[in-house]
Length: 129
Image 1 (spheres, rainbow, N blue to C red):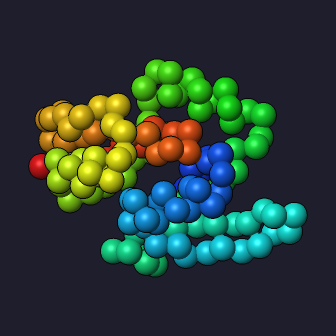
Image 2: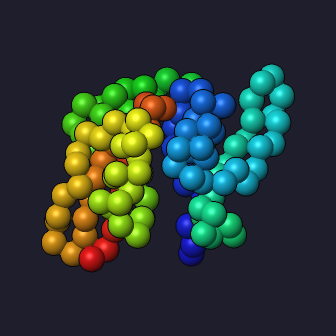
Image 3: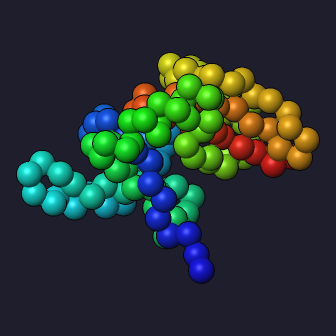
């Protein structure tokens, strides 16, 4: 069993694609038109272009809003991304205007920080010590 695809619900596909590529640094892998303005859009890490894809999924289903609202209200990240250095990535993203809800925090074997992805989610970055 392998992780091949993970989903992040987003409010606007094109805005999400811009944030995830231009700010976070992911690379667009797929942008498949599905008709009616819908698309299947995935991004990947440029360090692992054949690795797991992140699907930018429209948040239109009625269950998504209450789910995401509850996670954000409780400060729970929807997804976690590994980085080499949480402090450095926090600095880079802060300079780009990304709002963090949790500054870099030492949790033992890892450093973590949490930011707002501008698409309705909290995302945690993690680096191993």
